[in-house]
Image (cartoon, rainbow, N blue to C red; front, side, top):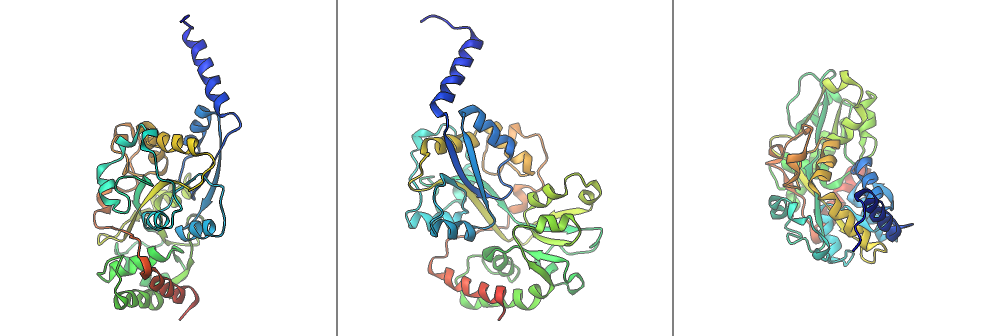
Length: 344
């Protein structure tokens, strides 16, 4: 075969890739603040495609939209308990692992914890993390690193918790010494009463979307939420950054493994496989986690490529517990959450 100069070969290869994917789109339904624009842009450029990126604020919102006919997405990012639900309901494509070259980078520890799909038959771990508590120490100089902070009446109307049933009830269950996955009606009732009687009266609202902005503008001094959301909002405000503390209470709380899944009947399935494999390139995964201040919790090889110190560590999650699929017991949680959201 006639040799082609390196530069010319690269151009031809690029045109071939572009030609093979010209006009193609990949439809992603992901959490708010969860994939860096730079990573999306690199994928688009390499494969000559356009990524259409929609966002959700909770698993419940994502699931309800899909159940209501919100189809057309190729890749979704459910947490482990919803991966389990969606597998059981036949909503996910079984993965052909021969289409991946980077699954060997997925941390074995995360797969060990991903009991809902440890062989990655339907899901590939994206990130293992946990929500925690963010405190403005200029406004709240003295506090205990505990979920009990939400019972402080002196902080009334300056605090928010997530609009997320499993997170809030899970926090209360852990505080009371129970499992975040309890199926004991009495233990769940104790958690419901704690939230209703001691925490909710001090909250401005339950909020999974604007808590970062509210914290950044000074409306809220204490928020339960995700570190990356808050730090994204306060970027550039050095004084507030210096006065901000994020912690996961030492006695733990709910943890999550969010996964990359391909929806059943996805129209752009080949691109979906490429995107999942792209995310688990070590240098790309490092870029993703550096952007948000995450530890490289789901990709064992990415640590060598990281350039930023994470906002919290894997060790901070040592006492956290993954949220499981509760099966029929989920209705008991829904009923408890209803009393919290609308009143007893």
